Amino acid sequence: MVDDLKQQIMANGQPLVLIGMMGTGKSHFGRMLSKALGLEYYDSDTLVEEKAGCAISEIFARWGEDNFRSVEAKTIKDCIDKGVCVISTGGGAILNADTAQNIFANTLSIWVDAPVDVILQRVKKNRNRPLLACENPADVLQELMQVRRPIYERARFKLESGVTDADSALRTVLKDIETYLRQNKTE
Ligand code: S3P
Image (cartoon, rainbow, N blue to C red; front, side, top):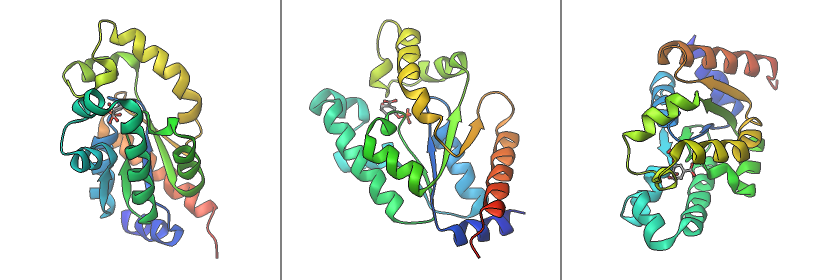
């Protein structure tokens, strides 16, 4: 099934782009997808960190969020321009209107969603999330989610993380992609 799907994805020509809140597992699922399909994998946070030569928390502290956002937008555009591959993006990437437009018009977009309590458990262990390095991460998370949810919802596919095991969540989204590509095949 995966070989057929890879062929369909190659024929479609668009990258698979994972969007969604921090701590939902975008990078984890991105790597799983890239391995399952034998496609190149790019992680926008990692690429931005490589460009800056330091961690995201330091980029925010030294140059501010706006600066991070503009490097992030350019990084994601360059990845999308590569064609078929798997890209995971930072949770706030879709706040940039051009990035959102590009993702929703030109990619197989996948919203990775997870229950808030699962997200909070996961981000607690990680200090590299400056937006949640505060007294009340649960409130901040809810506020961010309120603004972002309507944008994430525009994604073509949804991957439910933290509800079932990762393998079955992945299998479900692969099946959804296969069905979509079969129905939207251009001869
Ligand atoms: C952010 C999410 C982070 C990272 C930065 C900002 C956000 O990426 O880009 O800390 O605004 O939600 P992850 O979603 O990979 O944690």
